[in-house]
Structures are given as structure tokens and as C-alpha cells.
Image 1 (tube, rainbow, N blue to C red):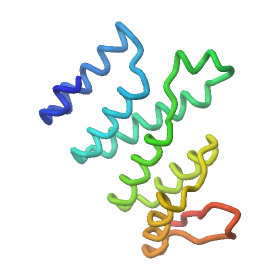
Image 2 (tube, rainbow, N blue to C red):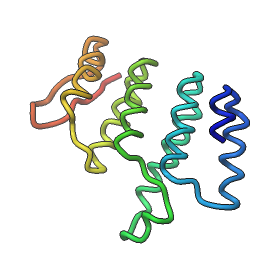
Image 3 (cartoon, helix red, strand yellow):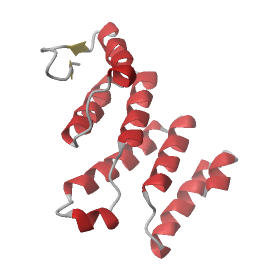
Image 4 (cartoon, one colour):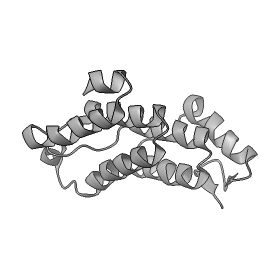
Length: 139
């Protein structure tokens, strides 16, 4: 899969990823590699679908043993999607990803997220309710 993605053949990499599910469950690293490849090749909708699938998995967790069977977004996943939302100026989806990140227990990192929020604010899409809450994006 990695060789296909590295050579720019994203469709083949995605195909291998899907076929991989028949033999073994792709892990978080594999998901993040495909997510990043989608975004690097302008395939935002495909990345969004993969992210949504991972986010839905997080809704299905009932115990610690479920983490072995499903893949859920991590800090890298969230930061990758937030970066993509900023570069694509997808402010409505930026808000969704950001809220999802906070909901899953990942916190605002001023070094990492402040510039993103400021970019959204400059675009007129973010207001701050207070310093203790996260920004809300408005259309």
C-alpha cells in the first residue's frame, strides 16, 4: 500500500487498503497514511469519508477491548484533518473536526491550534464565547 501511495497511485493504495480488510484489520497508522495521501493529492472528500468512518468507530466503543478491534482518530488524525480544513478553507468542517477532537478528550494546543483558529477568525468564520470554551464556526 505504501509503495502505491508513495508513487502517487492513490487509487491502487486505497484498493489495497480495502482488500487488506479481508485479511487483517488495518491499524491506526495505516488509516493515517491513507488519510494523509488523500489530502496530499487533493482528495478532500475521500479523506473526509475515511475520517468520518474512524469517528463513527469511536461512537461504538464500549470498553477497552474494543480498541483492539476498531480504529479511532488520534491526535495526528485530528491535526491532519484540521490542517486540511484550513488549507481548503472548509470552515464548517473545521468546526466539526475541532468539536469532535475536544469531545474525544483531546485538548486545545495553543502552539498547534491557535494559528488555525486565527485563520478561521480572519475569514470571519469563528467567534470566541470565552477563553474557557472552544470557538464556534458560523456559516
